[in-house]
Length: 576
View 1 (cartoon, rainbow, N blue to C red):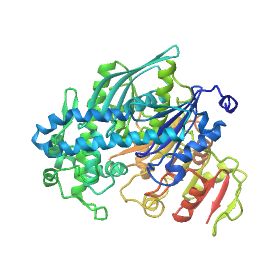
View 2: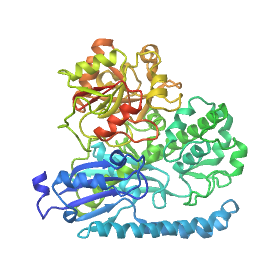
View 3: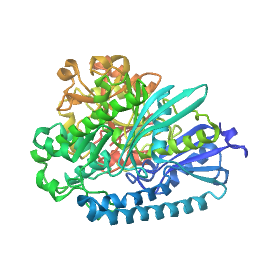
View 4: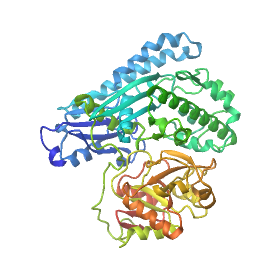
């Protein structure tokens, strides 16, 4: 592929998610995906919003190209569409709950449009020989979600906080004889936004919106949704066509951090805002439970409409809301469709792939290759050389049987970081940048939360299991290769592996086949031969507040700074 890439007649499409959050880059050469990298894994800034210089440099180097060889830069927003928000101004001025924010809202959408123009100027300077192609944000989400599934027909449901103005879209994707059609069948625009609502309550509960919604989802299992069920049902109202938000409870969106998202009426009906360092009390868990319950109800409603509008038996989910594994799992269990697919990177970073794919599809009528069923798309360090003392206080050796060595250490109770192969895409560690531990160890969840991850004690941990043994431990009638779906556990898991069971009786499982990840499958097999259970705790190789470790140096930092016992890094066994 590199030789082809080096030809001057190659069509080189660089897809970018940049300047907002979760910056990432993807590269297509003559319609083939070369790779994908999320900038936070390389620059060490969680949810990095920088231009993805490290990711772009790696991609171009991998393909044997320079910036002058890029023919098209595909950007994951069509910023001129922000101006559509101005047309909503008269309606917002006419509604008393929204009137006080209407003008400020319009002004901030104008500001974001100006920022978009500045970003396009920056990209034109970085890539002077390239055509700039803005891509509708939700279309980028939708095409990536569909292509990653590797199917011929699917309904696609995208739900996030905000595209340009769209917040929730339903698509019908069909592929036949190398031709692909992606048709928008329904759209919901801001201010109706499930992502906005979930983020607003996340912030009210003292966690960072756009980052810690998963913490609120975990907390929800400890609460009673009945206490605030009526409030959340009024705040997020379902309609025949989807849902709306009540601006008397969830304030009209203004694109500025100076404007809060929940109203005094919402706080009065629920609880005062919690400070990030304040104790987590039952009232916070109850509000989280009511929010999560309502999000699940709305997502089930939207999934049912998507099935009815498209007639497709497979549903692809994308957008930030798709990372709500409990809601996605409920859709999978509800029988609405035969199977639910969530791509490895359902959030904005994945739209770098989607933007590049959309540009290629629009130019050729054909889908790009190399996207389906792939998640290990980033930098690899297979030729890593390690000195005997890679850092002060660390020792490195090279076991002759890394699979057996790792399995035995895990069975003996060690908590081990693993860096192997190409960096995975998306928010879940899928065996290449993971922390592994035995679910049979007493107190392992407390130890992981307190001394390794440094996070809240109620946070659960997910298992990775051999796909052909998954039914012994979880009740999920489909694969879950990207750890995207929560499912009820079996009695076997509840009785023997309580460390992987959340308080609500579910677990967010990753299923692994030998074809997907030979090394991890071999480790699970060896661990199962020792313990009787081919199941391990798999959590991301990082600590709270930092991104997944994308490089060997970042992984060594994690070993030094956390309670990890050891690190297996491209066959090197590193201990303190």
